[in-house]
Image (cartoon, rainbow, N blue to C red; front, side, top):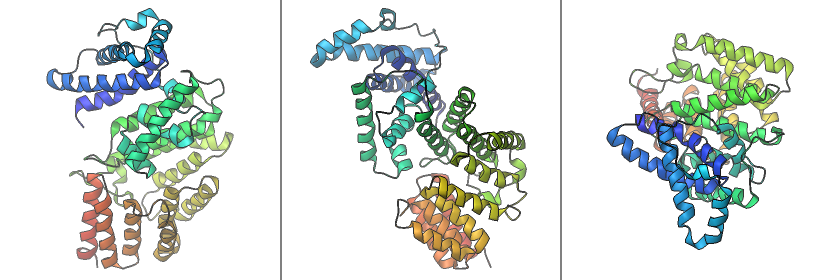
Length: 409
């Protein structure tokens, strides 16, 4: 990702939040921001970013929005109503050096999680508007076709318009909080392990998810799950420096140089987790954070408390069953009861939503290798590599396919 692309991805949701606050028209505002992003990409790549990039982008998006309203001849009466309802100063483009100072990301986040939308639509729309993910990336996160996801996002924007959704933090955020946290979790995961492209780690997405989760934690200090999610993100991110080798190839957890882990972040996240577990109701993000803490606090993969990890996965399965957690549980099961037990658990997942998923195949290959079936493990690693969208993951899996045949006795 270029510096311009990175900057635009960071600015886009903030500019969208500004426009939606002004005009209360999510669909048109998003279209305007997308047009402004195209203009910025062309201009900034050619001449460099302006002194105040957010002000520049907001100005152009504002003009595009006004052009849309004025040019919608088929809806002339609605155009007049929108223009009459819009403050006059909002129709005058702010100068490019007038950098906005208000941050509307949390309001935008809760708008996308409006109760009039179905939960899948809430998550998809938020990943698009706040997380900055593309439709193919969101489709990969949901394990659905790209066309299906595109239709879902379009319907969600139309629904917000129909119900007159308001751009504000709800007085009682709890009903929407579960979806908001799920969205932040997905954005972080997509950033930490990109589903496609040349980079394993997209820092822009993990940074955005962490910042929003911190803000949410500050506003909702009594939410144990918000604290749990923040702890989980920090415990995961603390291992980031050790995840790739000098040549950019993925380094699995078992082989990472743990001296590179951020021990300060681990200590702070663990303290936050312990406080939430002692004082607040238990939820699935706290359980996942507890699993991450067991990995981060161990000196090696061999000294990890695998029985406790497995017990926590069993608890997570009761609290919030999901196929990805079940796949991770299969790894823990293999560590505690042997690879045959892990392979049996993987077989139970092969007919569900993870069927044909490269991560399921990679776990099966790992367990086959542990069981001594190197030929089958190599073939499975090769198939996983074929299906992987991330270049670093693909290189790692192909390397594993060769290694299990040639470098192990």
